[in-house]
Image (cartoon, rainbow, N blue to C red; front, side, top):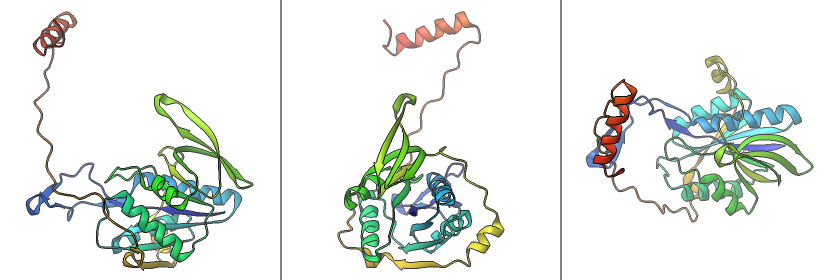
Length: 259
């Protein structure tokens, strides 16, 4: 079983205050720490578990600058056999451009695969579209929001995917295919600093994105970064239930919600 997992290095912006610079053209990420995309962490773990169970190899692939090598080292420390870095200095915000680049890479390098794993989405762009577009370009099946892979054998996979309203769907999908993995499908293993250092000795091929540019075209143009508008403060209601209900009713009347 040959599994390809795409993993992305993203800025950890949850607890950092971002600064817009260059008259709204850029975000200053110089002091923001980076990490592996959370969804991709689950994807790597799921691929490694499958290979540990039925055999095969896991190959990690990342698109980004030279610093993106760190997410490949982490994937290898988790159990991937090797990795490919498609190096580019230009940030590809457009999911169609990223998918086309990946498609060209797979076709040119001729990497064999039984399944491709991506995260459901990336924490920075949050388009949740690369997996589906890539599957369409490869003309192979695609399943999104995967929360369980129950079985893989005889050219098929039995998977469970998340639906709205807390529902699940259990489906059978033929291989090769593309799966977008949801968080919570497993518990990613702990990776030590020593493990990552050992992984740095494993071969990771660095390729240039410029070699895979055929039909790669940004259909989304980033025009300007802006801060969200500040909202008014919250209104605190009385701790007394009866008075709180009266105050709430008056607010609804003022807003025209209740007559």
